[in-house]
Amino acid sequence: MKTKELALAAILLASGLVLHAVVPPIFGGVKPDFLLATMVIAIASQPKLKNTLLIGVVAGILAALTTGFPGGQIPNMIDKIASSLFALLLIKLTIKMQSMIILGLISGAVTIFSGYVFLGSALILVGLPAPLSVLFVVVVLPTAIANTVSGAVLFKLYHALVRPSFDKSLVSST
Image (cartoon, one colour):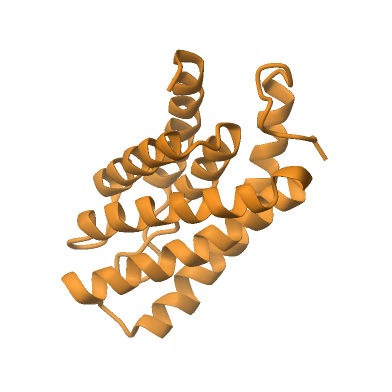
């Protein structure tokens, strides 16, 4: 990863970390994960497998450090790595038509995938404080909606701040 790419990913993940850290748990120690929206933008800005894996690992570590879920450190690592690869797949499939709306929808889809992976791995490793279906409906779906909107807004802000000449992977700004 080049220095500019590393710095950009670090800034995006740091801003996601701040959001992740300040949002309180909603239900049973589970909190919305806005770090995912910034992770998707970081991956979209440099859609390479090795960069994606590094972004996923760092996002997992950051989420594990701020989790409010008892024993949620390992499930956070599992879900961020799997979600980063899922995000890369979706980004590669839509690379020619990336826009604010597409990146928002990808953020929402990745959030749903991430929530399912997190809750599933937490269920297996440490147990859940409530039924999986309840946590999915009460936490994951509202977070997916919020990440769809925040992902679109953050992408628009990102694209306005970063020069298109530096960011060759993002095709359009609308």
